[in-house]
Image (cartoon, rainbow over the protein chains, first blue to last red):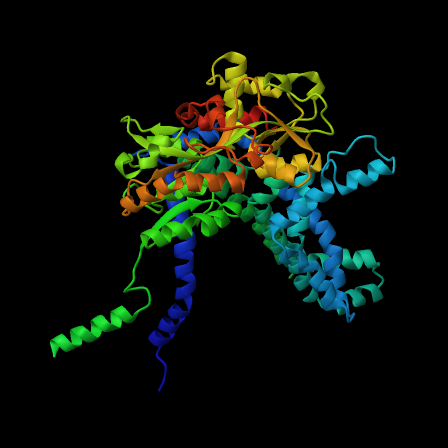
Length: 288
Length: 342
């Protein structure tokens, strides 16, 4: 019996339904509620007051401190992406091109940090980076320094944690992308006189842009929304927007204030990512 | 025929495990780890057996419970009995989430050293656990320990201090305390923050476990800790001492209250009464080195080296204006972030 177009459409809808439901329940509804709360008047004796107001947005949008912290959070995200990219690219290239029998093992080593919880990894870094930690202890005993280096409870410590925790996401994205590039293209370029660096710059790097794009978006989004790492390695002295949102919504009990911060951050990040994707897509189209 | 079918259905329903013997279930907020273990192994079984009920623990932290309670509303109680610090409990009491106690159903309430009243003057909260807090110091690093809060400003303690963030209840107490000690007014939080700024550089902790870790590692040499934490660290071999500040002590405390929307209020009252009995209070003291907070319970002789503050010392713990703090918390945290945490 022939399958009618209606039946095909119905089966397509059925396949789409679980994902649509999932997104509706766990993304659209919570975000809608967040948006709703962000317009409610703040109260010190209840979750929020009846009615609607723009006061929360006006307060945050005109608060220089909020913008400073948001700017630092976004800059921290960009810096983490750049550092992850610089460290991950050679590693991903090696992994993608390797024919060693230990390739799988190397791959496991790269992604192994993902098998340990973020908090536990942070505590590991604390043991290393603390004033009385292993690194400072060794440097002091070797007479290289007179006083402990400030390796933790500052932006440096936070960046170390962020890069280590999120680097595997970049490596995974890049490896898949580089693997998809035919190695013959590089060999051909070299046989035609291109140096190794020129072959990389003109062929491998541009063709791996999809991997760079997906890896950088993943790392950027995870970094700017990170909570545990700035909290633990920043020692409550490195404030980021997620920490500020949690403080406002849960510690200060100001749900509308926290919700409006989250919405502002969401809109700015979506805008920035849209521009970034557009620019990279444009660059990739030029390759075709 | 109909009777037979009905009998069969009833028999089937009764055969479902737990249905025939459906016991009343009480849900109480509780912290994970040692507290959860203590309640589950030493406290709950006796009460559950006596009242033929089940006590379930909702493990988490106060800020999560408060969010859940607010999200559920006053009519739907996610927890029947709430256990949390007064800084949080005060907020929920003002919002009307706690039922006034029926004091006839909590006979041991009369023995409690600290209770809280709601805006109608009815008792709706009782402290069941007290952990007095003061100045902790490493005995091998600090030969002349601070004896008062004001001593912390002495130059000899520079670069040795560990404090809490204002979002932690101990941090909030310290902030209000600085206002009280230096400006005779705990609501002078802006001036207090400027005064705390004079103590820089110092490490900041988000919770007491972090402070314990920093003292243990020697990252800070002088901090603020409760006496049970000091006892634990002493037993673990850390060279640590404790001073009761001359002005007053701070505390980590657990307030017990009944949710206004609870459907098991009689059982909730019985449970709180049970927690205030000398037997249960004595168990808290022995397990956690807490200070007895009901009349008739004393510190056992063998625990006196680890519990420096007895029940008579509870009056030396400062009471803070949490209504003021919670009402201005948003501004305080923002100012703290700008002045202290940068």
